[in-house]
Structure formats: structure tokens, C-alpha cells
Amino acid sequence: MLLPAALLLLWLPSADSPKADSVNSARNSNRAAAATNTPSSGATLPDAPVAKADSIAVSGEASAQPFPVSAIKPAIERPDPTPRQKRLWYTLLAASHSAAAFDAWSTRRAVSGNYGTESDPLLRPFAHSNAIYAATQISPAVMDYFGRRMMTSSHPTLRRFWWIPQVAGTGLSFASGMHNCSIVR
Image (tube, rainbow, N blue to C red; front, top):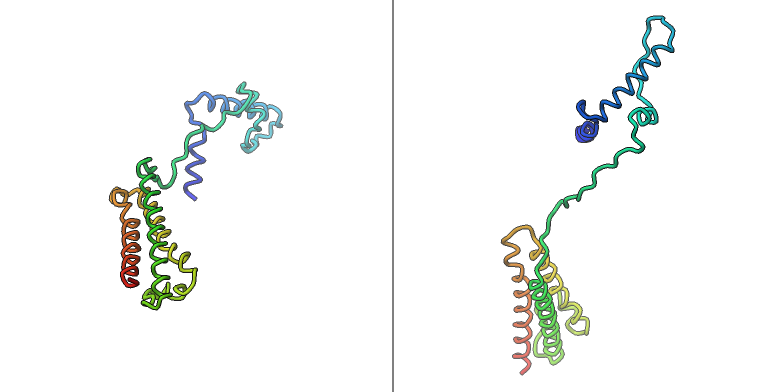
């Protein structure tokens, strides 16, 4: 409630501006004209707002001044990644999804050949079907999202280590795939 009142007061003309003088002189002339048209009963009429057309005619302005145009500052400023960071992020994206596909292929091969079972309870329902390829792509997608958010974070420490989630996910997927391949041999 205080903010709208403060904004309204900021847009009121100040007493030393020429526009305020012309509006005040227009009000005074309207009051004087109203006083001459009223009977001399000693009662004065209450102050009323001046019509916009009257104030423009008195001040000599043809149109009202527009609001000043200025850029609006965003609530959160996120730095843009550099072209080098973008290339590296896309490279890590491809590597993490490739490692996840390799892990899915090797897991499917190990489970189909009865060399072992899927130890991850979330992937166990998908281990005996081709749906494992899609299911294993969820983790790299989440790591890519976190990496991108860290890259554009406003915190300098997070911006410095944005690559860690993608590299960790890629390493784990590749290590799991290599373990599955060693079991099948």
C-alpha cells in the first residue's frame, strides 16, 4: 500500500517545475472564473480537479509527455556462458549420453546371457527389455541440466565447477559398462 502511494507521489510535478506553474496558474484562473460566476453569498465552492483539456489549453502543450523508457533490470542476473564453455558442455553432453548407452548395452548383454542381474532397483524392471536404453538416459539428462544451471549460476564457485556433474555421471556410466563387459568375457 505504501509502494503505490510513493510511486504516485513521484509522478506529481514539483513546485519549481514550469509544468507545475502552468497547472497551478490554470487552477487559479479557473477558481477566479468560478468566483466571479457565483453569487456573493460569501460561501466558497470546494476545490475541484481541473479538467485535462483546460490545463492543456492553458499550458500550451499539444500532448502529454510520455513516460521515460528505460531498460528493466531482471530479478536474477545469470551470466552467459562463453563459446568455449558451450562447446565443452555439448561435448560432455554427448559423452555422458554415449556412456549411458554403452552401460545399457553392456547391462542388457550381461543380463540376457545370465551372467548377472541388474543391481540398481530403479533399472531392474527395464533390464530385460529394450526400454533400458531410454531409462539409462534419464541420469545424464539430469546431470546435463545441473551442469548448465551451475555454468550460468550467479555464484562464482558454482560457475567454476560446473563440469563436475557431467564428468562424474560419464565416469560412473563408463565404469559400469566396463564392469559388465568384464563379467561377460
